[in-house]
Length: 304
Image (cartoon, rainbow, N blue to C red; front, side, top):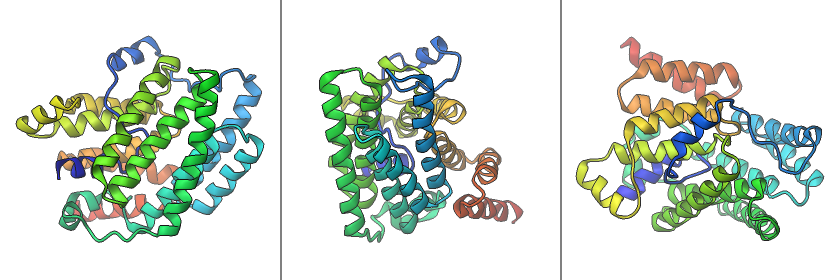
């Protein structure tokens, strides 16, 4: 039950579910300029063009325009058939569209709905899950092929960590297979550590490490002992700091870091901090009705 709750909250919006790599905090100090790693071995203009398609796709996804995101990611895959970031981005869009349909992306569900903690009544669409699995498998195959040639391939490591995290999300939140989810989370940990060694300014990784530290650090002491014995260690304050780093400097996952921070602030009874983040998200993604409704709900509670 503990693992289920931990994954349920922590997997809401992060694509890199992992335990904090040793020395990660020092990495930020060594890289004071927050610049996302460009694709290794590519000229600057080529890398920028590649990033622009992915960026527009992720922006569409954050706006809840899932069909628009699919079009962008499909175009990226046509132009870059050997890049595993194409199909894994498609998988992210497919999964998050299903999360949105099921209400998983609404933060209040994790705070006030006791039925979720007890198992909930989520009814996933098998066809959607099948499409998700196919996209994940394509990405993993492309990533493995590239890693055979270069074990430090940045895009392959990023896609591998992304894929493992997405699988953990799906297993925990939709399929309720929590032990399998934890296995995928450990895979994401390994790839994330390798990624940070190659690309220390890939700040998206802090989404995962911050969530893990916060959740584990929020548990009672006996539970923390059990988790630590199984390789999980965390500190609540450090988790918040790392989510703040991801929110400020992250690339694809910065908005998700803000979402998770807002949830953490609500859980810690700091609604004003959550409101600031939700207001920023609503301003940045005005077509996303979730941000607007959560902000309205928060303002309604404050007005009582």
